[in-house]
Image (tube, rainbow over all chains, first blue to last red; front, side, top):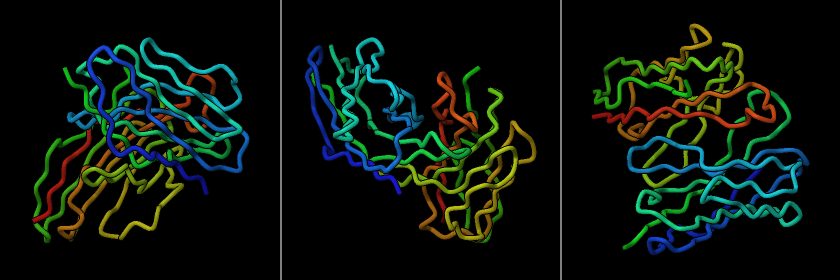
Amino acid sequence: AQTVTQSQPEMSVQEAETVTLSCTYDTSESDYYLFWYKQPPSRQMILVIRQEAYKQQNATENRFSVNFQKAAKSFSLKISDSQLGDAAMYFCAYRSASGTASKLTFGTGTRLQVTL
Amino acid sequence: DTEVTQTPKHLVMGMTNKKSLKCEQHMGHRAMYWYKQKAKKPPELMFVYSYEKLSINESVPSRFSPECPNSSLLNLHLHALQPEDSALYLCASSQVNPTEMNTEAFFGQGTRLTVV
């Protein structure tokens, strides 16, 4: 079974600064997908960024980028130029590429605070 | 349309009541999911439907009864719940088989359920 670990329960960043959220995972599969989801107080889980395991290039989406280290099974999220609206719970998630309707396995989450 | 719509947003029910949670999506996704999320915890998978058939039941008590009447709708019927079942219930949908451009699950805003 796959496991996802987020070792930082809470992080804080000043507005306009950069912060990195950590995620490690354990799997015996070679093909899979990794995601960062954001859950603000409004409750909806919103996809921030995704990474396909077969791609060596790190994914980027505007101010969000990942550092994907497949051998180390590490998938960290970097948020640049942090904004107040980035304050939320961030979940790292894993999805197998094999099988049908494979579920998402979530980490325990990191609560990000953004201060002025 | 990349929306998953859940109703109601809030629900308070007694332990002897019967109620239903509803979820709808029009993205053509044939995999639909129910997750349960307690405060400050990650979502926990309850059920997965694939092509309108139940494919995963994560040993959920029978007081929770899922139903997938068609490819756009997912229901969760609730009966004789306990106070510890109070939580946020999230619905999600995705492609059954991930493809390069369609790997992620889309989530609804959830139903905040309180059992009294």
